[in-house]
Image (cartoon, chains in turn purple, yellow):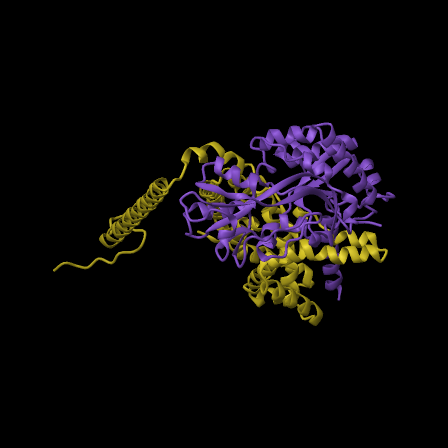
Length: 310
Length: 290
């Protein structure tokens, strides 16, 4: 029996060693107070989506930072989302720190308080609203179909009915092609029917496959207009097909299961975003990364209509 | 009539049989060396062939040289995660092996269950369970008013990765340790018992020092395998080599280039590791060689 006690003791030491690094959060009356007391805003971003968020080559960790050792400072990342996150943190008077979990972990909710907020160009969807609270959108993205340059038979998105269309799994493009997409405050016009959806880890993988040739692996890809345009700028032989088929509102998101109460934090961040929109900061970022104004339209989105909290 | 003279070993005169034997040995050595050189030439040829083949198909070597440093920055994380995990796994394996070999049915049951369940499930699933699954229990515990225990179940990415790799490799290494301990003959144990050592003393002074020598190569092999399996933790957003290669490649759609960089770095890492393992093995064998 003595051996079992030894085993149990050693295992609990093992557990303690593992847990010693994670400090339990101090009791605060709500999320906003906790963040202000901590002095850091912990933002999740998946740096797989240039120009929204990508890794900064040669980016060094900031010398003086409040970010924990397994978090990253803004200097190690770059992109539109990163700039917006830093601007929001500055307005709150705290430092922005970043963690980079897989995108599916971010959209799935139940973050277990591992990070405070997602500033990751997340589209507001009813499905996600089950798990997440959304802030005021900080920009919009038109979604468009892209086809291979070599193709001459398709002239408009509706020509793609029944074709092989690629996109990132679990995204709004996936839902659009499945006919289940709903965007609060927008009527979705389903112009493509019975498409064979081919799921990819990210949109760029789909665009790569489309670039292999017309109809080789895919007939078309449905993705964000800026993502497709970026791929074309990088030299992929693709072209946009017709006008955007729908617009997405992209907002920050907070886990509904966050403790303590996240609602005051959400209201504050929404206020900050509207402020950044009206003083031209967001427009400046949009011009810098996309060369067009994607942000102004987001200000008119009626957040209260989402009816997220009582 | 010539008289056959009897030769004794150690006699100073030259012995035609011995000379012939030595000549044969030298011949064998030469042949082995030539064989090694030939194999080396084939390797170099294959590498050159693969490089040329890659260069024919839109592979951009300049991009590799410009950006490989970014992937290389993940090397300390890869090594660190592997080292921490192999250390914890060794502890778990030792405990598991001792429990498996004990006569205690509870200890045997626990360690047998542990080895079976871990070896019977994919490492990726174990990582999912630890990183995504355990927090469910943690939040439930916190809701029940047990925040201290609850927070133990909510691990950060690095902690989850190290825990998963340790548990996984601990199970495989339990079997290695068990075999190592069993390779020490029972007579030694009986001899130690006869001079009054207790079981802990026997394990610590007699069995383990000898068993470790036998299992060092296997532990090192596990360590090399772990260096590659550590790529799985990139899923949680740990910036090790795979994560860096994967996320960076997306920026410029240079997947082949960046993954080749990562593959070469892993390859070099395992080559260096097996070389170090060879040195260690030679040292451990030293006392048994003449």
